[in-house]
Amino acid sequence: ETGVTQTPRHLVMGMTNKKSLKCEQHLGHNAMYWYKQSAKKPLELMFVYSLEERVENNSVPSRFSPECPNSSHLFLHLHTLQPEDSALYLCASSPNSGTTGELFFGEGSRLTVL
Amino acid sequence: AQSVTQPDIHITVSEGASLELRCNYSYGATPYLFWYVQSPGQGLQLLLKYFSGDTLVQGIKGFEAEFKRSQSSFNLRKPSVHWSDAAEYFCAVGSNDYKLSFGAGTTVTVRA
Image 1 (cartoon, rainbow over the protein chains, first blue to last red):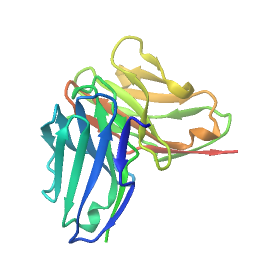
Image 2: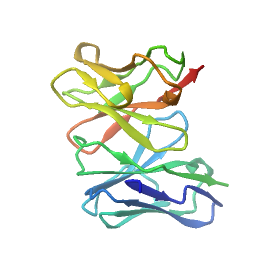
Image 3: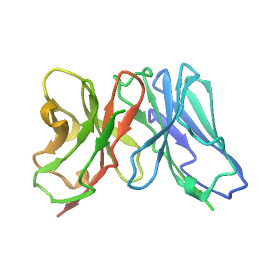
């Protein structure tokens, strides 16, 4: 069983759909992250949760809505997305929210917005 | 604000040859530095990290990196590459908070 599991691995949605990405970590970590990865661009940090509290919302449009019901689960709710939102969305966790620890990444959810 | 530059977008290397990937960072204080690798269809995996101490850091899969403060660099090296090293490599810099800044990545192709 991998440490960080993301579902679905692939998602195609129209601009008017509502969908959600799920992330689950089995590592006992206290911090979880959402990153956006677009081709040939640096990873963009979207959200950070530490002990289930959001500590960072990195100027992300409101059509992306995160939810962290407990320290093991993280969701990204998607609503009325745009084609430019098509990307790989990576979830990560770390023992705490400081960068002295490494990030453990999931395999990502590939999102295509039509 | 911290930032990372990876000057090489794509590198092709023969199997068995040496590999060096460049990373330059911008940060006012002593940085925390990382190299991650991403194989096709996978998430990122940590290769190695530098926080303090010895400037030559050993990592997994036979990789090493050297921190050079005077050059603001943290280059990744491997003496002899294997076909399985074909992947995308990301350098990252962090500070005392949770914000890691990643470079745009270098794609490594290994030819037989």
